[in-house]
Image (tube, rainbow, N blue to C red):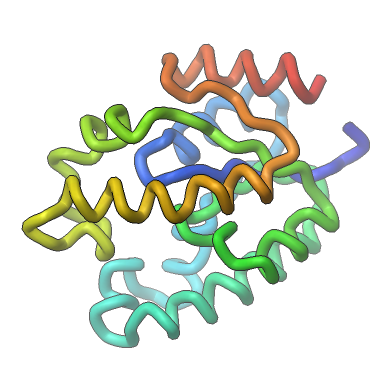
Length: 168
């Protein structure tokens, strides 16, 4: 793999952070969750960033974080759900990494996120409809950005195996 980064992309709840942590352990590579990286830099949660500064501010911080992380070598990066919907983030991350889409059906996403209260974009009474709308808008962008897509509708360990089969 020659120290290429591995960037995990996909919709909220697809398992990027969980799979990324397991994959990092298996491959002996550092793991960085892009949203946690932003939170550390901004000294507040993603939710607080959205509430205090708005989505535009968050997306700017996300672009900066993607650029900074793309300069590292041999890192597994869990992108945020919206990160790779922006072409400039795709371009910068592809320079030093392979993008892997954790693909799963929208019904699975809805099930996984049914009790989630932490995601700013889902803080609405019509959460299922919002998920469906966002999912349909974002999936083609994830597919266009990805070098590889793997089935993420299995256990995190199995998803790691799929990724390792593809990249090793």
